[in-house]
Image 1: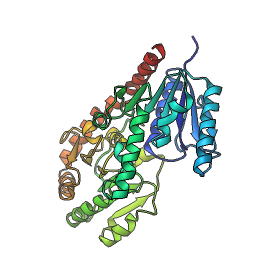
Image 2: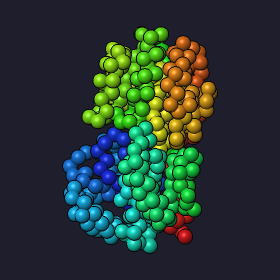
Image 3: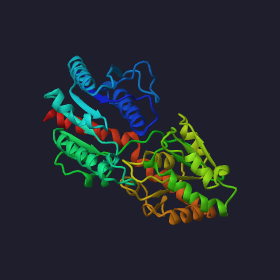
Image 4: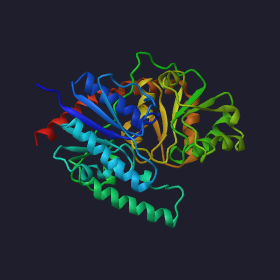
Length: 369
């Protein structure tokens, strides 16, 4: 029996984001374990290497587009039609959180089933912490376009039960992200080090984290925090750390491929995001036996963390409570260790062998239909 062909349509995947990491895990598992013929179509990848490792079995296609909006749309439409015709897939998956991704079924007009994978919260369209009339109008327009396009897909997949609340769709389904790694070792949780992972942007809430950290470090000046993520000129969190006089205990680091090793060296993971699509870094921390202190933001952390069992959930935006939760875990080593052991056990439900077969089932059901 011939292998089923799947085409992933995405953007440039040279970055270190969660979408890129998840795609590398899932596509490689489908190619290496489940014997799919996997094709990935990128946008303006050029000679840029992928940040994460992909199976050598995967076939890569790239299309180039320019910034001019009209030429961009024309090149994008022509490019994905060309690649789709060349590959002739049995199923297409769109991994593009931009507006254009919602219109792939309209562009291709194919009888092949097309799935949309939503990797972020719908709130990404709205800078919820900086409301303005202009922003509200732009956001409302984006929501209208997304809701219109979402109905065109054979299946619309979100990551958490909370994400279900954001969409009024009949074709919606929840499949969580798979784990990136599951090391044999477990973090000792003895280093006086806290870790945060994610790009420097308003969504990730590093301003809130630094405000909480100011209170933590007053009590525990011998502890430090490391923040791994791409810098952003629009958000100078290093300047904020200096203004708050916590820069001696805060280190900003570039993204690293061996983030697993950094988790294993840490004692607590923190997530201060205003919103999430899932919370990949939480399950990565858990796989290393590191408990998380996380805001209960929409959406993801509450699906993953069992409060006070394998981590701590804090009311979204409560900076004082976040500080207190960190101080409690710093001061209670036994609790930290118990949570770390529970985290490593509970996170097994996200292993690729438990998650990717759910995609296999969905693909087969859509192909048969």
